[in-house]
Length: 136
Image (cartoon, rainbow, N blue to C red):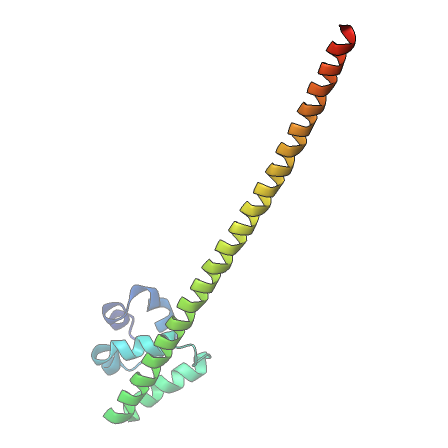
């Protein structure tokens, strides 16, 4: 397994537990912690085995391959953040729309209640007036 001391030194705390489940070359923990974070957080590398495979390949990769891997994982992260931002905006729009519809429905119900109360008061006033007229 990976060196816990190096993981805690070079990786964010929220990844410590996850990183300890992999065998990560110490050299890359020290020199490229950003790449290790990208691999650990990658959604396209969905299995434990696939991520471990990439960690195993790192020592065999040349600088150009490592740069390409970093670029691919960085673009993946950016695209996922864009999707999440769009999703959050749509969620907010739907929530706003639902709140507005609920407020409109509540307003309409209150107006119906007010009209019914007003009609009842007018009927009572008319009945009271008729009663007074019959007493005169």
